[in-house]
Length: 494
Image 1 (cartoon, rainbow, N blue to C red):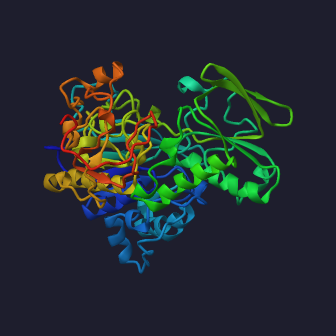
Image 2 (image 1 turned 180 degrees about the vertical axis):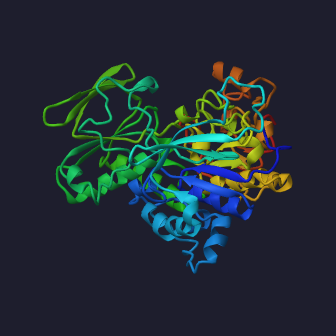
Image 3 (image 1 turned 135 degrees about the vertical axis):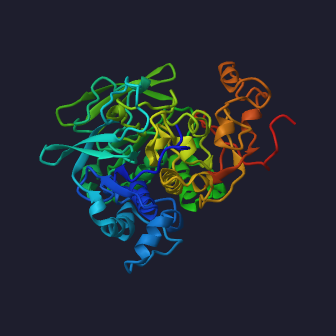
């Protein structure tokens, strides 16, 4: 339920002190709303610190929120070069750390939120529900519990730490445990802290995203310096084209270069690629190595390795929200109005129509999921998108409907995007109808194997939409078929 008539909020809890959570706090402060940021870790950007060695694709220009910048400018802060590409550690040190300091006591560290509910009402209670405050149950590092009560809540807790399993079917494979000796996480520091673990060893990287690509490039570099280092890459799809990306057509050159370099490594044999691979089981040996058994097509496959990097993506933690009334897409676990434009089955071009509070609202008014968690299981999130989300939410909570509905997203207006479920969308509202461009529903077309319902090649045609973002330069969904970008057309049927 969007905040069309609800009284302005005075207090708002923000779960998570990452980039979007701290940006939310800055916007709330500007609106005269008291933010209470609850961070489970010991410092701002604690999750980012776990992959601090990784360089972002987005330059500083897109990594700094507008309200955060205004807050920092009054502290003597020096803004980084807009064209520079920060590492995760630099993002913390040069931006998030100073921002958290500027926010002062509004940020509480070592405070993990374990549940959110309406004050005095469980999920089934309807009478008098609207307008109730929110109760957030928390636990500190010593295990002591306490409750926080606020008028509104923004969940910007992210998805780090909730990795998708390696097994097929969305479930862990036999023998797959988080504490297995061969598990190294999605983004190990191959050339730094974890170098000895990988030098001269065999490593299997599983996943078809940019996290997998980053790790593979680092492992290949290590292999050049350390004899006996072997790198194998396994993906579930039949083609790696989705990971190779659009090359020079990518709006983020650093992202495009990663795919180009990875493709060259595979073609040279430096990285062994196994496609169409589903994992059935892991058998751990006494020395900590593991045998990975599965299938590629109809053939049985057995891979023996010392390390496994599970770069299989993440999923949101929805358990702490169990007592709230949410309106989430059944497939992507994102707000239903946003989901059709980011569903990875149909869309991964890196752009999305600008969206704000009205598109992120839930039946429990005053509660929002923002940042990467708002994308559910979809992998195409950009920081600038999250900053626009919380700007709009803060405006709505303050009762400024006009500002909440206004688009202020600082990203290129691409006008080209691909989504089999919403090809003609010019807004989130249009996309929610989910109709195909030739009259047949997208779901019906997909079931019939016809993509959009416009013929066999229709899914390869870009469509002009009111999208903003940093396009990857290729149009594809899970099929992973690379399609060069032709000139955008006004429709897909003529």
